[in-house]
Length: 309
Image (cartoon, rainbow, N blue to C red):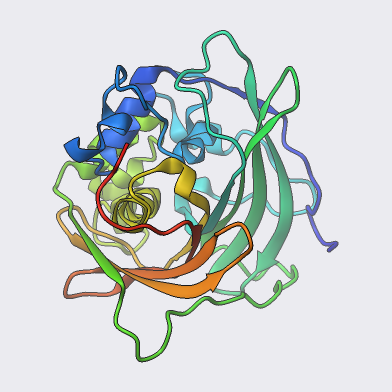
């Protein structure tokens, strides 16, 4: 597909992590003591939670807090307007897991390679920028994960760009009760813990940006809900075994406020390929309120129950 900005490659970004980083990540998204292989570095099956790569394009190699706005605005895309990164929210994310991450990057070199897949003008509501981010070993070219994401620049449309293709939807099966339900109670500090992973967007820490965007105050990271939902699926349907999930995706439908309870409903479709991967559909809602993650789809090897690791 051609269009403004399509194919533009951002400068590759070195990334790094320590065991303490992956422990913090697992803790911040709701992993529990029945999953010590995510929470205890000396567990014989210690593993990085599969979605950890999603944080690396924010973190880079840093251990210190960074200026989120400055980093977000660092590389303009040729052929499209310069958008205000203080008014951007996540639209949709899909990750494909190709190789498990080592518990630490120490002694190796990794980088994120990013390119633009499309820039879509949605008129008055805003503009969508779709990108692909690939995590690779810099020395041998091994690919560990691929993420396709869409950022939505609120109120920044109407510049004459292409409207973009229609989205493919993955609704839950009609008339079928969920096969599993997972709940997570957030608190007023959930976003403050999650941001220590490296996503320091002020929108999730202080009320002023959220008020300016019409949210009424601070909101929880969309990727907190996204990651914690993936944890819920793996816990409920995949024995908390990271090898039991291959793909995970969801669309960000509405904001979550600090203190909301998240409820994820999951449906097994029974569509299983020759390698045993089954498509799972899911929806995450705020209890008593709106859907916050829609279009949920994962490829899993479903076993259910608690971790056997």
